[in-house]
Length: 276
Image (tube, rainbow, N blue to C red):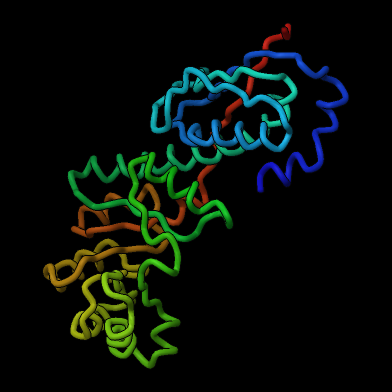
């Protein structure tokens, strides 16, 4: 999709200005300190472009690997091949590496904030991802030390408020899910109050999503549940508040900001002035 939307039928500028057969080596440089992610995409991207353009694939060398901390000005890898191919792929490469590195870098900040409290709370992502890029963005979260929540609607049951309304209540929704969901699928129920938490647990729920609970309310829920269900909290959580939730004893904290609000890392592809 990325190649189709950017390259289309051909890179008009590069084809018009760069002779075929000219080779060079470029450096992929991070312009700010980050936890890099997305480098794993470069080789398959190079192979795919070579196949569709009937050229020799770019060689990726000295790849530091995803999950590596890099200081501003560091080289993440070098790319050797036809100058035309490098220039045509430049923006697609930078978009992927910049975007995914931004997610992994932000995720690491959240995870580090939790670890500093001494808690074992997991930092989870959500389904608030860029359409079509969910696998990539969740991969970047994992590179940053976060944990992946469900990939989509197909691999877990998460009963939310509208499901409850349509099903006729918390208990009805939970019991129906237990009866009809495929074996082995996790079943979790979103709750807005402690009363709903009790109702969900009594109906058989073993995972509860506390929606928009304050840290104090979350601590009260931990005491109330007393280990009868796994507790997750979500809703407006940021770097200023996540430590308080971890200290409250919550098992999981889901953070939509990891993917919907991460700022891309500034990366560049630097070619030498003289090409071979």
